[in-house]
Image 1 (tube, rainbow, N blue to C red):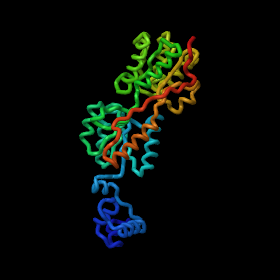
Image 2 (cartoon, helix red, strand yellow):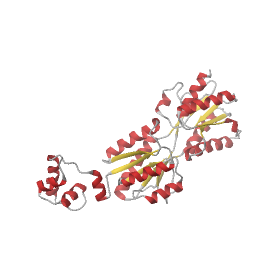
Image 3 (cartoon, rainbow, N blue to C red):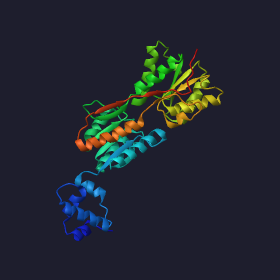
Image 4 (cartoon, rainbow, N blue to C red):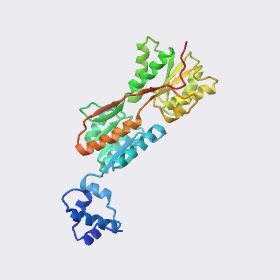
Length: 335
């Protein structure tokens, strides 16, 4: 395997000159640069990217921290991030925060140690105060996705979870529903707190009863747990006409449980979700939901990372995306 010394001997230049040519930092005559790259090609020489990062404090890479890799939502985000990084010529280094605050911090420090130029952090568990402290503890700038930060403390690209929940509940109310159950995770994360609070506030705005008996809490946003908790709803035999599910997966799991119990959807009970996952179009009946523009958010995150690398500052430090109601077949209009 060729080394940098082989390149030096072939071209007749110093290691420092070869390093400057490879990194693009410092002055190197164009004829010398061309000779170096020609020699690299002939000798099949590949520079050690980690050594380059240590020497230049830059790695031409973007770090991405996800809470987990499970499900369509994060699969779509990862696919979009990979495509966007390729278009900008950057290497994407991805790691998993395991839905745990301490492990999310460790993941950020791991990417910082590898000299990532920018880190994109999708955190479900860290508080704003913890994110600020984390930002101040590492060298690369951090762009937070999925959470809104005050503009004076960092860069963020967020989704308006309250607006999305209001859209969903308002739609059910506009169709004549007054006994609307909530089905979602316990209010422990910023996302679950916002979605549940918007549900409550919308009912209150319309003078509808706030009844704890209509709140059913599942373990997380997944199909299995929506299915299992919906069985508890069925056993409770409450006069519910509609379900506001905190995610499409929860909604689809609930629909299966109700169908197995002999209910017709939407004739006997209406269901609405949030996310607009691809599968929501293909279930029977097709799920009415609120679109979460994850592709647009991911593209914007990568575009912001590129802008940050080029200009050292972002024109918009905080950007918020809104949801869009997608009407399909799972909600019935009551007389």
